[in-house]
Length: 437
Image (cartoon, rainbow, N blue to C red):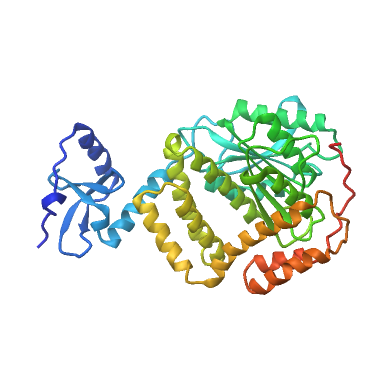
């Protein structure tokens, strides 16, 4: 026979606010049977709220209130609470936001900006309803193209960011012309979309990545994702967070690594196994996630809702690739556990995920490999301040990679990156002028 949980667990909460919360939640949450961890006690009621990151408040069929330590509930109940909180913060059941100038969930463009420039745009379905959203602006070396923004869509949905690609910016323009074009697009979006002026991010590929450095200086960027480039000589190293991405056989691998060293502790550098080409979409998504995390690590108290949205969204996202790319899932589970303020439900979920993935040695080696590649940047690659010759073979770099190739022989991504670093540099498809000089 079922009986209510009693003793210190069974507390009547008479506060008017809590009763109000109960009345709001009773219609939304199902009446269900809750069970203690050892199965000896049960209680039939609705989930109301979580208190002090420790207890769950339930309201029974006769409107009696019970406060129960979450850790004393069954695994099934704790999973139910996690899913309930996740749905609440991710707002999955909500419709599209009314009053927006742009439709959500569609790649748009080219869209006209003021002063005659244009851009591709994606406004995510996950756009936050009650706060302005970060903006990521991407610039390419030969203008903006549809594939650039398609590569950003998944990251935009996970983070709740607005993403745009500038069409007319290219390396044949002067610095001033590119600056004016980008300023036009940014100002248009500030005027027509719910963009957070304090949260502007800039990315780009090759010469377009150099434009991202200029944009970052002009607009006091919150973060940068430059790929396959270097810091333009006229600029000081940025003080904001930066995720630099370059191919292992890219002729810009040295100058990109040198930029990592110039920026210092605020920079992260990742290599992909290719040459001078745009970064793989998954790396761009990871870069967006890291920049979002860095912001929330610094300002958790003033961004509690965004922090919870980010964590639940990341856990939901990790679930989609934990089978296909368990090394990435392991890396993210560990990072979130270490760097962010997690509630009891989030920590339990990530601990479970981490412990499962930790049994695979190659997942651990992937994380170690990222650290060893960064050490290689600081000890050798980042000490070279000039561009590489094209089709250049570097005996010193090959020697430095040799022991790492043995250590990471079967490690996903890391082995391929080391193979690329041990190869000769590539030759770009076109001659790229030093337009920024």
